[in-house]
Each structure stands twice: as structure tokens, then as C-alpha cells.
Amino acid sequence: MVNPPTRDDSPLSEDELQIDAMIARAADAQRRFEKGATQHRYDMAALAAAWALMEPERNKELSTLAVESTGLGNIADKIKKNHRKILGTLRDIKGQATTGVINDDRTAGITQIARPIGVVGAVVPSTNPAATPTNNVVNALKCGNAIVLSPSPAGAKVCEKLVGYMHNELTKLDLDKDLVQMVPLPSSKVKTQRVMEMVDLIIVTGSQDNVRRAYSSGTPAIGVGAGNATVIVDESADLAAAAQKIAASKTFDNATSCSSENVLIVLDAVKDAFVTELHKAGGRILNEADATTLKTALFQNGKLNRQMIAKDIGPFLHAAGVSVEEPESARFVVLPSTGIGADYPESGEKLSLALAMYSAEDFNHATQIAQEILAHQGAGHSIGLHSTEDSRALHLGSAMPTCRVIVNQAHCFATGGSFDNALPFSLSMGCGSWGGNSIDDNLNYKHFMNITQVVRPIEPNEPSAESIFEHYWAAVGK
Image (tube, rainbow, N blue to C red):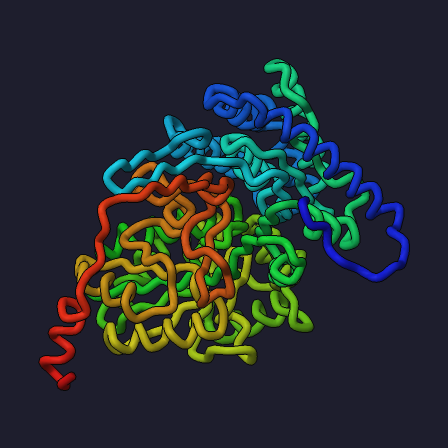
């Protein structure tokens, strides 16, 4: 870092000194990586990091370790997620120029040159302890950076093994292993804070406490907001298709994704028919008594019950103390809801196989409910719509505090990029000013580089005041 943070005269702790030495090694490695760089070098390094996870046996091993060490999600879906997310990221970066001249507009007199940021720090969550760090590393190396990972304590073993595999792949290319490093175990807030202070860019995916700390660290920061995916089903929707997509998305990796549906808003005109389709898809509508029992179990002292977060449906229902009809085909539960806000925690993110469902008189009423829900939690992240009325999607994009309107898609597969939509593949979704974030798009390789502009003189293009103000003067006078 060019300008280390100012602080009082108290000596650095051993943990802080350890982090400083690690980042110094990363900076040295990055300078060597950048010197005489070619696009081929950067591309091969990115592929090496990707293959460290995507190699099938390693993917299986790391997915198994992730579930065992964090207790979150399920192995089969993590394997799919790791493969799909990184393959999609590689698709997005393939052929993209990230070093040297990337644009030369002689008419404008501007040439753009891509430059590395330096040492990137990435704080990564336990929900995706392999896919998220790999996505960050691939993007960082693609743009000529070194990167230091700071995993959550629960996901640290996965990250440590992953980094080891990345080192093995980098060695095959005669690249410095210090390009990719991880905060030494045991993890601690002191170490993470020092990383935030000392790197050239900090990226945070996970707890909002870490996001706030990153933004106040004095380092340029990209943090992403909280999810609370809210999805409207209107009277024109293909109800069977909508139910199947919602079920597939809600149950994928046991709802570890911030993009998993948390709230459904269903128009009264189709509610009964849609509930029937949800049941066919594995959703079980709870009666009032069972819903109360489940909410009491899931929300304890203002926090989610770790015995229910991202668990399979059997352990989830057992911990909740409720039973459902046709349990052999049950995949998730639906809580009929009316209240919104802190006194109604089901209106927020649940990270579990539970959905809240609200009834709306019409589409306008549905948008009003959605506004209230996102004002409570999830502003900026995303909203979904199952409808054949495209004008309604445009209305949501114009009226709602959201950066993404996901139309007729399984939400958690679509929001972070999909092979059948054009969003960049990512596990970190910026939420704009609504979510208190510095970006409003999916984190991608473009966020991992600086661009220097060479600016040359061109023919003057100075307008007259009359040509600028003519319509204003005509309307109100000069």
C-alpha cells in the first residue's frame, strides 16, 4: 500500500506484524507478476486458480469439507455451484483485455491502458467457502493483481486447502505462490482489520459488520449488501413453471445463497391455484399454529437458529418441532404472513428452507408490499417477477429500490449470472446506494483493474451559450 494508515504510537501486535509481512510478500510478487506482463500470463494464472477448484476430485473434496466444517448446505449442490460459478466466470473473462492498451479512440484522442490495482484483499463468507474466494482470485489474477484472502473461521479449513491447490497450479506455470495468500490461522478480527487497512483494495462478501468495517478502513472498498429476495407472482404467470423455478432455487444448497427466494407475494386471483402448484413442487404451507412454532424455533433472541440454517429439510423440520403433510416429498415450508418489520422476522432473510408468503389484492398492492419489505431488509439487492407482462418488470425497475429485476427465472441461479442471461457470473452482488454499496452491478473482473487514460488534443468543441440555453430562454426568458 502506498500510504499506510495513520495510527497512534502504540506498537503493532504480533498478529498485525504477521499480516504486514504477508502483504509485503504479496506486493513483491505482484510487482514481478506485472513486470513485462502479457495477457497470456494473466490469463494462464487465472485458469490455474480456476482449475484448482474445478478439477472434479478436488471440487468433491472441498465441497465435502465445506459441509462438514460449516454445517451449511449440501455436498451435491456445492459441487454444482463451484463448477457452474467458476466456469461462468471463465466464460465472462475469456478474450477480455486486462493489460496494456484496451481501447484506442483516435477521434476522441483517448487511449485507455489497463493497469493492476496491486494487492487485493478479500473477506469471504462461510456460506460459499470455495466458490467465492476462487471467483475473487480468478478476477484478481486476470487483471495482474496479488490477492490476500480472509475467510470466516468456519470456512477457514476449506480456504486453506483451496489455496494450497492454487499454489500447486501456479507452480506449474513458474508463478510466485505469494500471488495468492490467506490470512494465517487462527482467524481473528484483528488480522482481518489489518488486511483491510493495508491492501490496495478490499472486497467484502458476507456480514454487514465486515462491510461497514471495510468502508471505514481508509482503503478503497467494495462491499455488497444483504439479500432478502422478494418475488411477485401475478395473475398472468405460468403458475406451474413459477412454482418449479422457485422450488429449485429455494432448495439449492439448502438456501445458502443471498439470492434464494425469501418472500413470495402472490396476487389473490391466483393464490389458491399457485398454492396447489407449490405443493406439487414440494412446498408445504404451514397452518397458523405450526407457523408460529417454526418461527419461534428459527428466530431466537434476534438471531437465526444455527440448527436450522441451511439444513436439509428433515433436520430443519425436526429442529423446528413441526411436521408436514406428505413429508417424503416435502422440500421447503411456506409461512403465510401479513406483518413486516422487526416484529415480524419472517419478513427478512432466513437462510433456510422457509419462505414467507404474502397475499396482494392486485399488482399495485404487491409492489407496495414489496416496497415495505425491501425497506425493512434487502434494499438494492434484487426483486423477482413471474409474469407475462413485461411492462410490469419495467415498472419494478423504475419504482423499486433494487439493482436487479429477475423475470421468470429461478432467482438464485439468475441473480449471480446464468448461462441463459447476460449478468456477469459472481457471488457478490452490489446493491448500489440503496444497500449502502459503492457498486450496483455484479462484482466482476472490471472492478479489479485501474484504467489510465492518455488524453490528446482534438479539434475544439466549444458550443455557444445560445445553443445551450435556447430552449430554456424561450421558456422563461433571458
